[in-house]
Image 1: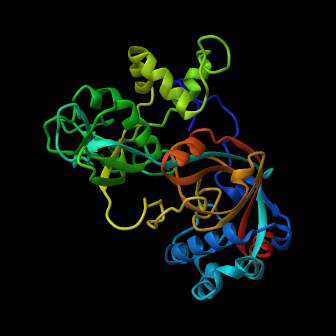
Image 2 (image 1 turned 120 degrees about the horizontal axis):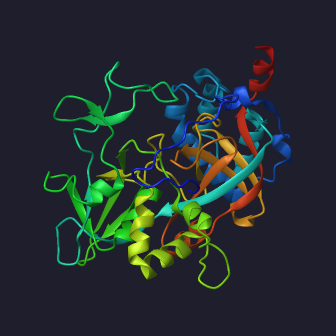
Image 3 (image 1 turned 180 degrees about the horizontal axis):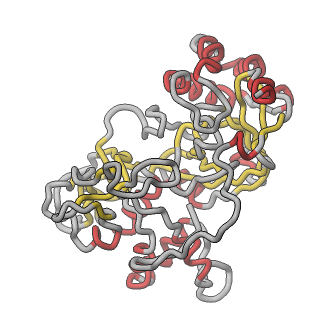
Amino acid sequence: MIPGASGPGTVTPPTPPGPPPPANAVALGVRAGPAVTSLPVGAIDGAAALASFRESCASVSRRTDGSGLTRPADWQPACAAARAWPGASAAQFFQTYFETVKIGDGRGFATGYYEPEIAGARQHLPGYDVPIYAMPADLVRARPGDATPNAKGQMPLGRYDQTGAFVPYYDRGAIEDGALANRGLEIAWARDPVEVFFLQVQGSGRLRAPDGTVMRIGYAGQNGWSYTGIGGVMRDQGLIGSGPGQYSGSMQGIMQYIHEHPVEGDALMRQNQSWVFFRELTGDGPLGALGVPVRARASVAADPLFVPLGAPVWLGLDRREANGLWVAQDTGGAIKGANRFDTFWGAGDQARVTAGGMSGRGDAVVLVPKGTLARLQQQ
């Protein structure tokens, strides 16, 4: 989840004139990919992808596809077949109902995310002083006429001040300085502000209290400020690398820098003005943007303007562990543009290591219902 660097109070320069970026996958350009039969779908990743696709069907067959690639009805044959299709012959399922397309140049880039488990508790215990906030009621979208719509045509998020004027919501620095304190929004408290920062980057996680009880929390909303990847800021400052005084660009390396340089680290985290609010989760797994659980080694986050959420995705990268069939079931603040993915690795120490060091490049194709490309070519 990386680049960009504009701290609090920084004025962002106007975007230079030029052609606007492609609005979605269709605008960027779509062409046929390799035959599904040529993709080496293994028994394990195939069965996992089929199970995740099956869970996505309730949403994918009724939601509007912002990528422009598919229509809700296009998914109905595959979804109907998926209900009873055995996982042992998952490869045949995808071969029967799907074709592949490449979006733009088809050159993929994948990072990783996971479900963190950090020290936290429902109560404000000694040493547990970092608040985890629920969505505040005054965080709203502007009424028409009170602000300029964003690039997606939506009214921006913010708040109405005491004069009734619509203003941006409190940014990370203001929230850390207490803008939301004593409003009854604290659903839990954590020990380490750095762990909470990265829990916000991941979007969900587990809080383990001193008595061993676990509280699972998930994404509830965001304050309306753009995401800034602090790894990119560190790279711009010459802090990322293998030389003296430099750190790994992995999540572990970034966390090490912040812990070893607490003052500079706090300022660094504040450059990401985005703040994530949480809610308690009950039941199965962390939930993705489709409202269904994301699964380890089966779910990816993608930009829904370039990949239909619920669609299978094939990755052939220079990181072998990330190769194979995935299902796009989530989104992310840093996951923007064509062929940009964030692979989900579950919970635990190994998931943390794999996700934190994941950076893979290679080929990416999207699996869409058969007939999609022919229909698009006729439009």
